[in-house]
Image (cartoon, rainbow over all chains, first blue to last red; front, side, top):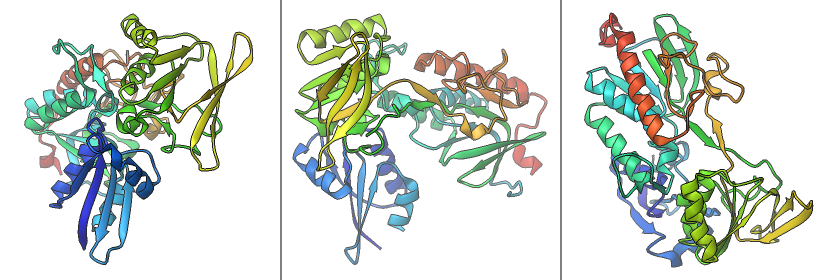
Length: 82
Length: 323
């Protein structure tokens, strides 16, 4: 079971709305960290994902285990939220 | 191989959901021709990841590529187009039906529109794969924000390279534009670029190859090595990241040689935009002879839709009745 989801995004990233739309279609809510508005959190996104890119979706489960999905990657995102 | 069922059978399947396919879908769905689009990435294709589109008619101030893509998608969906997300891996001609192998399972259609567009080419140099998404990027609108007050190299001399280099000045402290031969961007973009050069924000290195991307012990990009082809002398540019825009590679692998292509892999069509496979139409950047512009992709999409309608005349439009 998913406990919470955080998505790191930017305003101009085309793939970010795709992830948000996908999660919304699955009835899942999420927190969004817009790195244009909160540039101080870029290092956090990098540390979590190992990549200088967005979207980065962090799925935390009830047992506090965490799945990090870099980019718009449904093959990884779908099982992560299952 | 799955059998044909009501669920997997469609009148028209469009491979891709870029400007060409979305425009075609607006036309077909308005004609009540049931249409499904299969998209492996983001609707709008390369247009969606382009910062700003200034040469699309009807928008005197220009508009963001993402906004244009979103509007095209909404318009197509308003008339009933259905976009499903998956990848088409093979196409088979089964006479009246075309069978598509996809990550969503087998799909069947009376007519297929191939509008798969193209993707940015890679440089194929040392360091490019190693530092991908950690200093090497192909999408300025996605990844530019990570380079606030950093130095960047942009590789390429065409419209995309120049446009994205200018976009990246929003973030980067300085940009070095490495151009293998000479600038091929449009005159308008070159004039715009000159303003950034005059302001000292962008330095253009003409006749300079990009040979290697170098990182440090922390696995971060620190330098790009190249060669000045006029003097054959080495060029070294210290940088925090590299954005590559060196042309386009057609997305035609899925066709597996079943559709006739030109020497660079673009799909050939006749005057009706039909490929060498009957019932398979082609529009947009993937078509041999295409001009690689959003406006022309939209026009080709509209043309393809009208040709598809003509082709379907005499066929049962509601293919569900045939399942």
